[in-house]
Structures are given as structure tokens and as C-alpha cells.
Amino acid sequence: MLQVEQVSHSFRNAGGVIPVLKDINLTVSAGEMVALLGSSGSGKSTLLHLMAGFMKPDTGSIRIAGQDIVKLSENQLAEYRRFHIGYIFQSYELIPNLTIRENVELPLLFLRVSPSKRKKKAMELLAQVGLTDKSGLFPSQLSGGQQQRVSIARALITEPSVIFADEPTGNLDTSTEEEVLAILHRLNTDLRTTFIIVTHEAEVAAQMGRTITLQQGHLVDNRQSPIAM
Ligand SMILES: Nc1ncnc2c1ncn2[C@@H]1O[C@H](COP(=O)(O)OP(=O)(O)OP(=O)(O)O)[C@@H](O)[C@H]1O
Image 1 (spheres, rainbow, N blue to C red):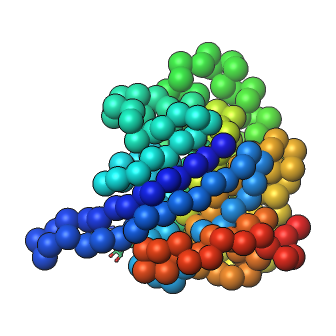
Image 2: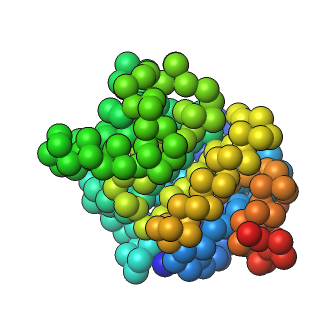
């Protein structure tokens, strides 16, 4: 469902050109849970941003469900992201003055879904992540792990075929990390959502079905996890 072919990318700044990704090739099948592992600065977030359509690579193609997103115009890409892609940030990125339910509903507001349908769907997803009783609270009234569960519900509300997550448990303690990873696994099993998760923790990567390792912008390893759940 996701094919990255010969993707290279550089950043330009006052000091010159910084090559960040070099000739990346990878394929992810529908329903997989994949970890992107690598040391700091190896290019994980850059690759995730390219695959999620936040920016375009210098060269190469990125096909999601057959569509090369590199070829889309900015408007088409924004539209594509709204319908097909979910994104989970390390720092949750919830809107502080909206309630938990309103935060989860937000992607559907942009898709002009009616208020009653938005509310129903948001409450269903909040139930799935165990937060029904928190729906009327504001983000600051929730713990970090609860806020990340809200952001998972928000990412799922458009029923995207793939969810990209950048260090989704990076701000959480170990037991809360386990809870959040368990929710991602359950959603993967129940909804067959594909997850691509950036992490620098080998223990998190070991819980995914496959681990792709980057080193200084090169893909150096791509293997099934021996102990994947
Ligand atoms: N907007 C930018 N402009 C210039 N250089 C950038 C930019 N974004 C990232 N880089 C550089 O690209 C390289 C890869 O960055 P990236 O954030 O993809 O790495 P990462 O593996 O996700 O690291 P970390 O684990 O620390 O988040 C780094 O050397 C970084 O300094």
C-alpha cells in the first residue's frame, strides 16, 4: 500500500546543502506495523514527513494506494492528507481551548461532516481509547498518556489507511508507553490500520512487526521483528 522508490532529500541553509536521505527504497503492506529506527539525525523524521506528504523529496516517488503523492499539487496533497493519512505527534498537538471531543472531531469539521455525525464518531473513538468520561474536559486537564490517546482518536477519525507517528511515546513513562502501544496494537488488529512509527527505542521497535533502520540517511536494515506481538 506504500511504496517509496529511490527517494533522496537534502536541506539547504546558509552553510550550503545538507544531504539527509539517500536513495531510500521500501515497501509497506496494508495492515503492517512498522518501526523506523535510527540514531538522532539519521533522517527518520524527514522520511516520515515525506511519506505523510508534509513536504516533497528532491527525487523519487512515494506511492500510497497507487497514487504518487510527489506528483500532486499542494492543494491536492492537502486534500489527500485529510482523507487518507493520520498523524500522531510526540507532543500531542491538541488545541488547548477545545474540549477533548471537539479536538477529536476537528478533522471531520474540515471535511464538512455534520455536527451530529462528528459528535457520534468522536464519542465512538473516545470509547475505543477508554476516554468516554473525559470528553467534556480540556487537554490541560488530562495526563500525557491520556492526551496521546486523544490524539490517536483524532488521527483515526477520518478512517485513514495509514497513520504516521513521530515518537508517539517519547514523552511518556514506561507504563504509560505500554498502554499507548497496546492501544495502537488493538486498533491495528481491529481496524487493520497501517502504522509507521518513528522511534529511537529498540524496545518499542521490537514490538512492531517490522523494523527499518536508518543510518546517516541510508536505509541499512529492513527486517521482520522476531518477537512482534
Ligand atoms: N528544516 C531543516 N533544515 C536543515 N536541516 C534539517 C532540517 N530538518 C532536519 N535537518 C537535518 O537533517 C538531518 C536529519 O534530521 P531528522 O530530524 O530527520 O533526524 P531524526 O533521525 O528524526 O533525528 P531525531 O531522532 O533527533 O529526531 C539532521 O542532520 C538535521 O539537522
